[in-house]
Amino acid sequence: MTKVLCMSHGPLARGMVETAQFIIGKNQCLEYLCAYIDGNDDLEKTISGYLAANNKEPLIVVTDIFGGSINNEWMKYIPSSSSIHLVAGMNLSLVIELAVKLDTQQDLNQLVQEAIKTSSQGLIYCNQLSYEEENEEF
Image (cartoon, rainbow, N blue to C red; front, side):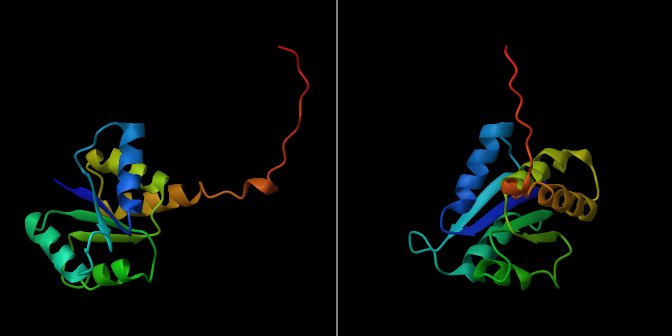
């Protein structure tokens, strides 16, 4: 089964998965790893252990920030594994879209690209929006 693994510096990944599941319901494909808490500082060991436990199943990894230690460690696995799809820049809409559409039998490359496009459209600087105030009585 393909999984979506959220991994972050600190507890962000846990909160992201818990919040996504709060919105879409329990989802077996969503998992998380939180680094640098509770003495969990060996990223190489954590990642290789996760991969060994998941028998090289297809995996979409969403990390918190591009260029961070977690993302950089995952980047090492890309050249040797076509089953790992790595996305940096975790956000809730991305995680939800990946989890919900994972069952569609869509090509994972296409699924990831579409989810990135859709979730990036949700980044909006609201101060630049104009609103018309309407004084209607209800």
